[in-house]
Image (cartoon, rainbow, N blue to C red; front, side, top):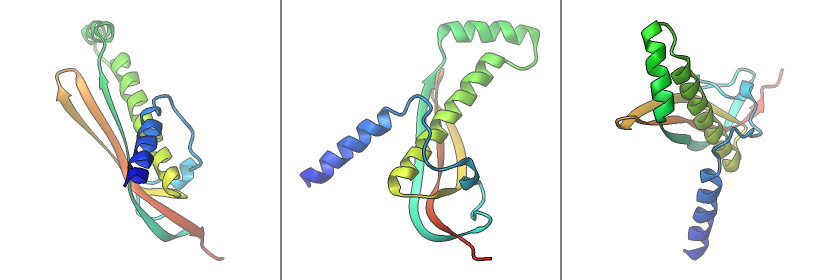
Length: 136
């Protein structure tokens, strides 16, 4: 039991350190919202993997975005924040899939919830799988 707690602690430390964008060994063409990878056969299902990022808006960002809303159109400050947050959640999911031994992630989805005013959770999840090329 102690060994499992130690492993869980190490995993927690690793996952909490994934704040900056990190490249996992799973290339973009091996990730999909579909449930298969063209040209490959799924040989093992490793389970659900996920990346979670919780963000709050800064006072400065909120003021800047408020000024942008007066002009109308795209609110680039919030768009950049949303895109950066989704990328971090996606990258964290890929690292978790890589740690599980996956070659690909299928069925990828995003979800977002407001936890409290100005604080949003972004979740990216999918199914980690091992694949092998189809024979031609």
